[in-house]
Amino acid sequence: MIARIFLIGLCGVALLGAAPQSATAPQASINDRMTGDLVPVHDPVIIKQDGVYYLFTTAQEKDGGGLIHIRSSTDLVTWKRSGAVFDAMPDWAKKAVPGTVGIWAPDVAKVGDRYRVYYSISTFGKNRSAIGLATNATLDPASPDYAWRDEGMVFASDSGDDYNAIDPNLFVDDDGSQWMSFGSFWSGIKLFRVDPATGKRSAEETKLHAIAERPTPGAVEAPFIIKRDGYYYQFVSFDFCCRGAKSSYFTVVGRSNAITGPYVDYKGRSMMDGGGLVVLHASLDDTKRFVGPGHVAILRDGARDYIVYHAYDTKKDGAPTLRIQPLGWTPDGWPVAL
Picture (spheres, rainbow, N blue to C red):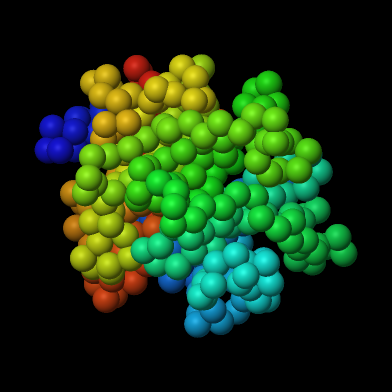
């Protein structure tokens, strides 16, 4: 662990050291400048439409304001609430997962002419869970075309399964094929083929691929996959979220030549055996204020990449808070949160 954290620190220094020198003081980071509605934010995912960034997050019924909260910003710095995907829990979800009181861990992507928001239905510590899908023609709430349409269940798990159908992430490959990774605890992260026409699990290719796992009692969840220079990069969260200032969450990454794996870290260790290069960790926060950084999304914004996540603010009773950092890349192709 210490060796991995130290390596990341060295990589960050190398990347920053390559930047042109300036006589003026460097601009404060995005995290230092962020303002507005930043709390509570759990499990953020982000997308850009017409110059506006839209952020989707977990929401419980007790939070009020609907389910799957939406925030918006024009600069990644100033954030405001912009409604919610659902006013109330979909009827199918209540039947599929009795006792559910919130919608967790959304994912967002534009496919064709519609935006897809995938979401998780579950109860804490159980794997009777389901992934659902809602779509919209636009994310602009001022547009006359703005209307969320629930498309129902995508995939489900039950107590007899060795996986947990939450934390979905859609990946669209260069050839147009679509894949969904998902998983939390149990036997780790899985991947299945998605039917591009429906946005749901393919009826023709139903195999579940195992792409990340940790030896018991290690926890792994919340996959997010991107592609860069021919490699598929799988980001996942290790250890425990949702414990406020006592959260031990952190983020690692591995890469593969194929979407189905095997994913390995920079030392060649398989993510099926707990491997992963540390990208975010409380020890890497110079302020020592934020702990448990995880459940990441990667924003590809033109030539720039950002890593978007939540962390717990130890100066505000462990409040789950939105965090955003530029994502740099080492010469040998490994990501570094700057």
